[in-house]
Amino acid sequence: MDEQEKEKAVGVVREYFRKVGVGAVQVTRGKIRVGDTLKFKGHTTDFVQRVESIQENLQPIMEASEGDFVGIKVDERVREGDLVFLESGSSEEMA
Image 1 (cartoon, rainbow, N blue to C red):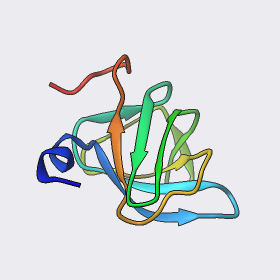
Image 2 (image 1 turned 60 degrees about the vertical axis):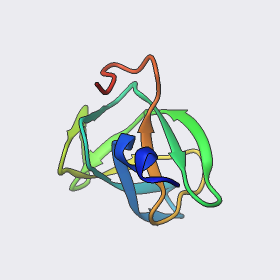
Image 3 (image 1 turned 90 degrees about the vertical axis):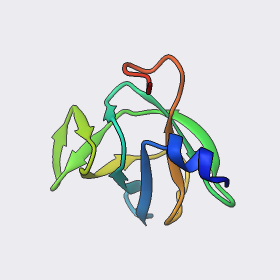
Image 4 (image 1 turned 30 degrees about the horizontal axis):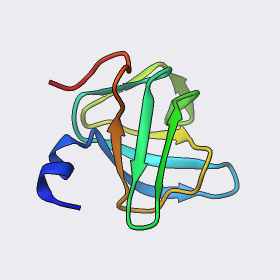
């Protein structure tokens, strides 16, 4: 992944909880909201999905902002270091 791609990421995966299918994501830029479409990309990860659930400290929330560390329910396995991108058409596109 090049530096330009890293700059466009809205978050990075810090951990994956296999039993519950949740990725721990640190939001590095902008916001992630329930209903947004995210792309998870890494060396062996590459998929797109709609955000159905976000939790912070085991409590459901509707949006996460820059600096937040949240759990996002994912359909596929994610890995530490995978980047998270906001896809076109999501509720708030990055400038």
